Amino acid sequence: MSRIIQTTLIAGSVAAVAIYAFVAKNSDPGEWVQIAARQDIAERLPPSIPVPALEPSIETSPRAAATIEERRLDRQSIGAALTAIEPPAKPFPDILAAFRNAALPSDEAKLQLLSALSYCSNARHSAEIARNQRAAGNTAGQDELMIESLDKQHIAQARYCFSVSQADYLIRLQILQTAAEAGNKDAMLFFYEVGPAGTWDEAEVNARGEDRLAAWHATAAAFLRTAAQADKASARTTDALNTLVLLFRTPECCVDPQDGTADPFARQRDDAKAYAYALAWAELLRLRHPKRYEFYIEQTLRPIAKNISSADQETAARRARELLQQFGANP
Image 1: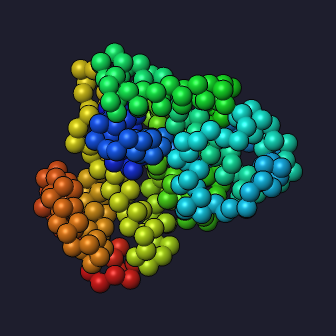
Image 2: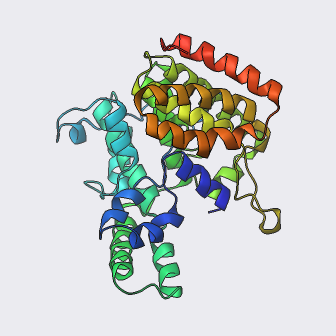
């Protein structure tokens, strides 16, 4: 996984594989597992991007849905499904077969499939991480506990996810985009975090090509803008604004031509847009959390401002005031 992809994941509240070891060293035993669960989430690409079409018979299994209380495709349920770290109730091929054989999809069944695919995605790098930890000599104390957990996760991943393909991960994209296009604001909010390839795997992201990545970026931005305006300065609004900043902001690090690392969204970055969203987000933050507001000014606003002209800053400030008026906040 490239450093630019890792940074995108971390910034977008989706922790990258590279932080597993760091978390293990800087937290209580076992905490790294929960943080690592946010590694890799996914969603469907825009209609203009060719992805494997869902067969008419691909639906959700009522048998699986009947085992627990029905859930809805809301923020809490989608988030839990996409950050799954526990193995599914049965191997993925069985879950997929039930999904395809069902007559009509239910939210519960969609969530079960999302959870199974997300577990398989989140756990698939376990063996590599454990191997790297051993090679680095990190085999004592909390490092040893982490490696043991990674080994167990690798064994479970092999058992439950042995047949998962990249085409299967694209089903996550289809489920979430379908929900977003039907007006589900929570699905819109998660669209960016799940990545343009159904996963944030570097090779799979790069394989999408410039046109597909550009289309995914545009769709993600449109969904986030809609989600931000859905409620009056709600938690969804602030999350959407913050993600829009990440979507348009030029990364400060991790682009290194010498090792082939590049920003796959270089053509879509726009620091002036990022600054407008950041100003609006900062104002909402100031009204609720003054201390965090000061930190945000130093860590985010000032660095972005250095990349744009004074004229662009003024234009961004006007746009931020317009956004705040739309949200019912006092600019």
